[in-house]
Amino acid sequence: MDYRNVKVAMIVISDGKTNELREMTQNCINSALVNSNDGNIDVIVFEKTQFKYKNAITIHFDDTEFNYNKTANEAIRMYPGYERYLICNNDLIFHGGWLKPMIDCKMPVVSSLDPTLKKQMSLKDDQVGYTNKVHFSSWCFMIDKNTWNAIGGFDADFGFWYADDSFLEQLKKIGVPPCIVVSSKVTHLKSQTLKTIDEEEKLILTTRQYDKFFNKYIKTA
Image (cartoon, rainbow, N blue to C red; front, side):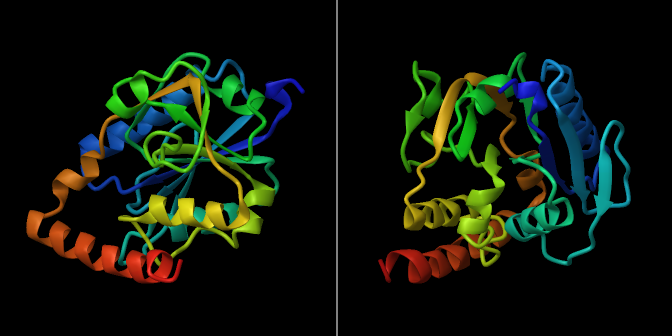
């Protein structure tokens, strides 16, 4: 199948509360489209502010608490007519020809490789497994509709911290390992949004979410 015939919804989740963050989201959109080599992509940005992006559908949401997994679920439910869904942070730069290898891989869940990440930069071949940041890049991954249905959607109990780990646990339950695709390269700018969160608040949130993750997925395993 020609990758250009596969319909992909690129879901970008953004909180553009500063000019810098809004510019970063727009750069993410532009680099994805320019470097997709005419892929069949529709970009849909779920934006927490009222800002509207170019070359994309912008959906405004006003949840008090930013919940990554919940928003990704809502995006897929709102746009059910796609074969694949690319779930993305807004702090990404897509490299040339990134889309074709992801589709050609033919795995249900695939991620792009970040050439700046130590755990991934030495990989020479596609790798399958459940190790976070090795076999799976939570900031840029593609999932097919059947797999999303099989896990019952992303676990909305984890809105930010441990959202990726909970997804890997969901995949383990159905026996579907993710695959890192080394010839699809996307640089992750390392969550500029986090810089706006107070360190004490960050510690409280991470501790609370770890306890929830441990009790739900580890303690009961």
